[in-house]
Image (cartoon, rainbow, N blue to C red; front, side, top):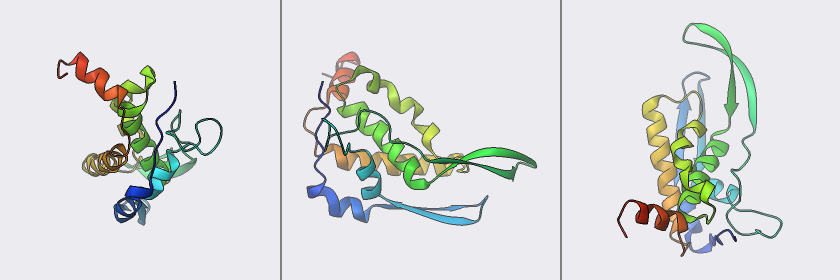
Length: 157
């Protein structure tokens, strides 16, 4: 099965204008990511799927950091906001557009890709932003096997 082709040219400006800013209260650092940065990471760059949706989640470059959280010191995984956004956007796009059945149950795990230090409220805002980026990307994809499969299962089509 072939993964769907993604053409970012018609939506590049719109994705560039979509940005998400977050202040990490644990490390007291500001982070930002744009929609185009997340979109570029979900596209395969080599092999037979070049220019198509990646067949697997983009890699998250994690570091293990030691910090105090909730009055105790521990070791936590730390990923960049851009990696977290790309992983979450990929899950949403793969759910609707991938022809592979195993990709059509992924959004239930998407929250695990949010940065570890985000509060529940901030994580929900981040998920909504990632979903809006995915929605823009999905406008360029014609066939949506995952959406059709769930629509039939739930009786919508």
